[in-house]
Image 1 (spheres, rainbow, N blue to C red):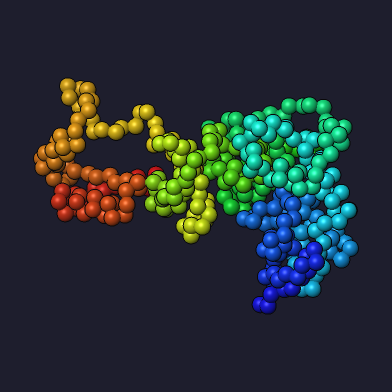
Image 2 (cartoon, protein in one colour):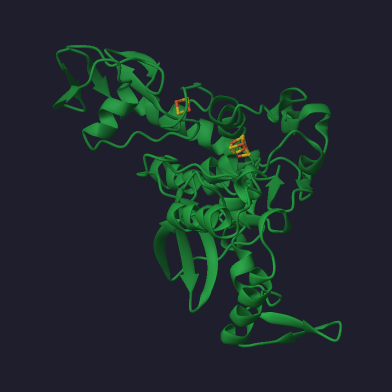
Length: 344
Ligand code: SF4
Ligand code: FES
């Protein structure tokens, strides 16, 4: 299909058919502030911050399709005012301890507030009486801080459209509206599978990992947990792993991860991790050299054949390694008792 031609802020630009005004503007390098839009999700039109003017009429740019010949203004006195009020109403209900927030400098609300310009006096007048909203810290991997939530619904739509679990939804009404699990249980006791897909998409510091540190560098690798082979970036500080994130450019997982790939990297630096072979002597495990351990294994293997032998392989090995394990079991040990941890 032919490209569309439209004018945004006096700049002639082209867009693919089916694009929204917000997407067309982004493709042309024009920023329209937004909070509830996420490129992975269907638009919802919740925050009203992405308002633009199309031939004198106001439209939500995340919902309105770009059309051929359209003339769009992203800035005007009315638009600026609508946006400022929408953002101020969010800010007056938002816990503002930005410096200690995991999302500081990576927060869409900070970015949008800077863009629209906030009047501190008006905020002080509007700010409602401090009422501490609860933090749900029941999940072992991340917290949900209702005091920072802007009710954009990105987590709700992520859990529905991407994960398909529907653990989250809006609960209660009016000023008491909260993101809630079914029956308003703690996250740990809900249907949540702890994949963290909502955490990576939350635009503010409402859903944040319990452990967070900015890495000094990242290394791209493949998640070691199962045979899917998701691409991940492991964040490193010194010789410690401090973060893990999915590689969005990967055709295998498109940036998505399960709970193990996203949060399960701490075993690498765990002090209980085995780093040398252990051999049981007189009922006690004692450290041994690799030569000693491999001699013992070879010696024990030579005493057993057929049904006396079984093997279990690991998804943390390559396909080739696992092939060799089953070949060894069948051809050398004469056993078909072969298993693998990836089906767990
Ligand atoms: Fe939006 Fe985050 Fe609140 Fe969910 S928890 S509604 S993603 S701000
Ligand atoms: Fe369009 Fe929120 S981004 S309404």
